[in-house]
Image (cartoon, rainbow, N blue to C red; front, side, top):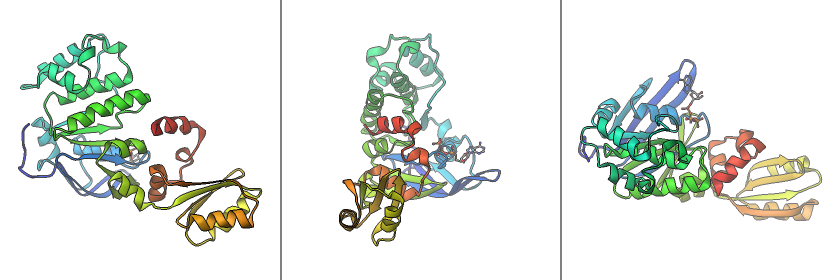
Length: 320
Ligand SMILES: Nc1ncnc2c1ncn2[C@@H]1O[C@H](COP(=O)(O)OP(=O)(O)OP(=O)(O)O)[C@@H](O)[C@H]1O
């Protein structure tokens, strides 16, 4: 593996801002990713994840601030084969086999890693003779991963790499990535799958509206948003919702039909109030998961992310 500037971080973003006309996609991000870290860039749609990754890949330039990759300008780092990306779609010919695809790509890289080695590292050595068109979405992503490994990059970037994959595809894709990262490669991946970030990254950088709103391990992110969720069915949910909102220690209240949901540090007090002063039934108290932490921290109350039917199946799958 080539080294660029000795001891330079894998990624260094300083005051990075990206504007598209009047749209501010990235609003002053400072971020250092050390070598060997596996970092999830987690945020809702439009948070600025792709815009940031594009700048790290040298595909676009910041409007303000600086981006350094292994101590170099992004384009210089790419030109030296230090950075690879796994894209979500495109770039595959369905009539070639898996092995032919990797061998063809390898022929374009002077000094590429051996084809069998990258197939093995991507966990697709057993399907080398399969036509790409017959591969599942997860297998195709592992093939893109194998191709990205050919230059033996120090830094691997993945922009929502598991979108559209089923649970098993996602699991085996991440198993291959994690195993490879164990050898010291730096990985930065964008995702809006909260559990995926929690499960597969050492560190989560939570972005919202072009800014970093939290940065830490999965458990630190969850701890930042400590508290519990109290849910109950009540006769007049709107009125009870207003009562709960006025209580000390209650962060946020949602009313959905005849259900009231309170996110609170003082969950016992909320439960006591519901059971003694209202007609609440079916009371449930749960610890906040990372999804709740995400909502609390980003203040993202977009209904499509909090239980809208169109997104629910996708989220359910992501949470398995
Ligand atoms: N080329 C562009 N021209 C105009 N606006 C853009 C362009 N690229 C991105 N944006 C806007 O910048 C904001 C950030 O977009 P970006 O794609 O970086 O977010 P994201 O976090 O990757 O979202 P997603 O999860 O949907 O991919 C959005 O409001 C988006 O509409």
